[in-house]
Amino acid sequence: MAEPLTLHEDPRSGNCYKIKLTAALLGLPLATRAYDIMKGETRTPEFLAQVNANGRIPVLQIGAGTKGEGRARFLPESNAACWYLAYGSALIPADRFAQADMLRWMFFEQYNHEPNIATLRFWLRFVGEANLSAEQRAQIMAKRMAGCAALDLMNRHLADQAFFSGAAVTLADIALFAYTHVAEEGGFGLGDYPHITAWIARMQALPGFIAMN
Amino acid sequence: MAEPLTLHEDPRSGNCYKIKLTAALLGLPLATRAYDIMKGETRTPEFLAQVNANGRIPVLQIGAGTKGEGRARFLPESNAACWYLAYGSALIPADRFAQADMLRWMFFEQYNHEPNIATLRFWLRFVGEANLSAEQRAQIMAKRMAGCAALDLMNRHLADQAFFSGAAVTLADIALFAYTHVAEEGGFGLGDYPHITAWIARMQALPGFIAMN
Image 1 (tube, chains in turn yellow, cyan):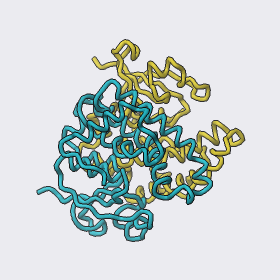
Image 2: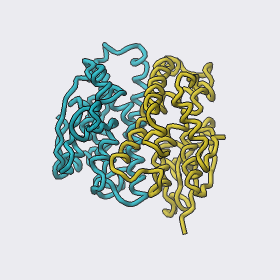
Image 3: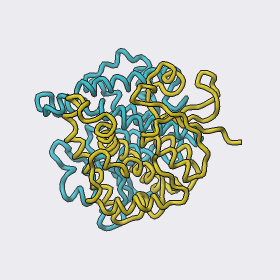
């Protein structure tokens, strides 16, 4: 029998949504345990000791019990958790180049996309512009430009193909969909990116698709 | 016969070094073509059209020719290029959890480590503190703290095990080694992290190891 899967999450987080969408598309049962990151619930001594020493969600828990008991295993990093769930499925292409090319877009997502598009969404929608520090406010324009550059690259790539790594959906699409489809909450307009909006519609039409909220 | 492999690189970049170290540990021949990122050589129309529309190095080229001719394939993102090279080798564990756990550290590297430790090295060693913009200077303290947090997490993780994903070297170690072993060039002292310095010595003792410069 398969080990139970539990997602330690904040439901507002796109990184957590990636994992839930992957499980849904694969038909895998996934329990959830919610934390409020705005209240510091992932920085408690208990969370740091038992779930993730890095103090971050999401964390995918595989098996029952706690870290101290040594039975459950814990996997931080959203894209790594998606990889665990999708291992051996059609969401990860088997071909050597295709697999590396899929990971290329997942690393792009963590380096070029998430720190700009997800961070501006978090700052503007959840923290509130009036509550930002001077250092944060000084970064808004740079993050805006870098986020637009990421969207522009994605839009040009999608001009030629239905999904990021070819004709079928893979983890690269799930990773990039999570914060792209709510980019307007961070002040990014998607109207200039027709290939992205067509791809968003294709994602939402997938069998088993679940919405973020 | 295997397709020729060419790395489009700047030799000062730790991201490029990851790929060269992976090839060296695997005994794979790898040609290189150098660009000077300080002179904008990866932002030329030719580079954007033929190598990487994202204007970044490293890019691993698989096969001969140019993009326009449709024979060669191009793989941006250092960690994806390492994955391509190491596919099917012992540098990627075959076990489902171990593979995901290795990727966990590679995504951590791109999100928590590289934007802090590599960026401060680039700013302080290559750009020069006097040449930084006000926005960049305002970020130094936050990047310093986040970089120290990444090193602290790594140091605690290595207290229990020889390499990041267990007893043997994997791509996670290569990805994290690249900028950690030169972190002092970004103003990070490694003296407080004895498990990291012991791991650096283990990395440098690997058969086939090559130094960065």
